[in-house]
Length: 241
Length: 354
Image (cartoon, rainbow over all chains, first blue to last red; front, top):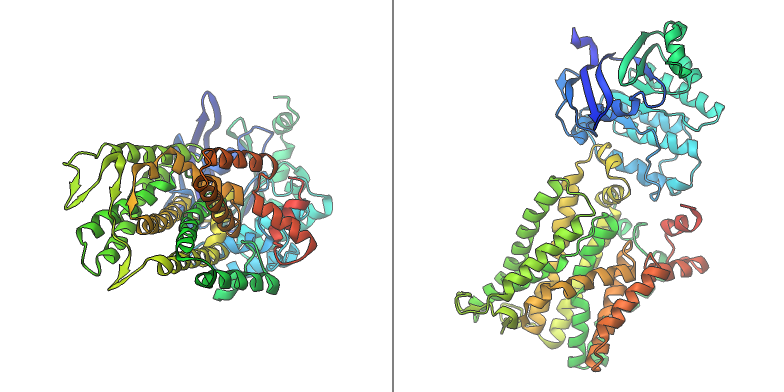
């Protein structure tokens, strides 16, 4: 059964001291899907991504990616297996040029990149209006282009699963719209995308399936309409629960 | 892949354009012509300023480009020097003894650095602890070497000598040609020059980009698929090898070494050279190391007991007023007027508010 899933997460647990950040999260991601994880601040969304990528160590649970158990794998090896992550706070290399930022992931990565990786990368550069020979320091380009640059950097590695942590944070509406369109197109080429997002309008625009995290647990799952129709989901979003 | 020239003229070091390369050619020419205008004794002193440059370059790679501060680069300087002394001393009279000794010195430094670096980087020791650990290693070495005064501390025919140090270390020779005076000057010049060229090509290569990426954000770099532990480890061993080159040249120059060469004072000096010149640029470090060694020599040979106080005060002043280093700051000021020293990075640091 797990064969249809590109990613299967079983009972993921993590606490920091007495604070439970992720509590028994079980989640499956179907290959080719574009799925969103939503939830109020502090719901454990970013921690969940950090656990997936191995940046934090797990307290318990199991992660299977493309049929392979990656629970104990080093972060860089997970990337080589095909995970790609952008961070919630933009983490391009600010003191390096755009060219260097793009050259670094291109020079690394995997001996064999997934099908269509090169086309996706080219498409992203074009749609995000990025020039791979641009010698401008990344710290000096506009905020939304830094966000796009980080997505392009991750795509340069040819991931099979793209993890985006609030990719449109701080963007103007038309920039958000462009981001959504590009993500749609990337998804249409067969790339699986998992997005953590706050902006409900953006989520409504892109996601087929939505998972709601709350207090480190999976609170609700379904289509965006199903989920937002639930009064208890509205309550947690408005801070009533 | 990039050709050698584009690696040399890449953005990650000071200096580009015809004017810079013309100035560089003239400088190299002036050094090559030293026998025409300096006595053999004076050239021998210049050799001393030059022989410290590889160690400074190694620390520059490690600290300035990779973000890893080592306070113990002199440990590898000393290990190479002592190993050379032991091996070449035991092979005294053999024409290839010094060559074998040099290889042995480099190998000894590389092995110690690889073992130490393995534990430090693969255990993911936090980067602020690293300077302390590296300093501890070199101080341990000093303490150990300091107590080797007895006759039991004899390796073959060579006496380690405790705090008096090891004396009578053979000069470098290839076959029957012994390097001394002007010929040693050219040896030191050649080693310093080619170390610099190799480092400059490295930092502009794709490996150099990854070093910079690790300095900027190690986790982001790891999440682009790089095993940063291996990368830091390799740069650490490379820096140790560059220190070892300096150590070899030092014992071949003065024919002696003492434990104070790996002591606290000696350990601080490379950090000062690199910081005063500007740790983010290799050329700045070359100029800084050369100038400070010259200054130190001038002050101490004129009987000034405050040479180190003056050098230390210089460090404080530079750190307060030119935190990015004197040469880097001057090059940027020059870059505002004309092109030769300008780098894209220099631009950004001026404009960027962060």
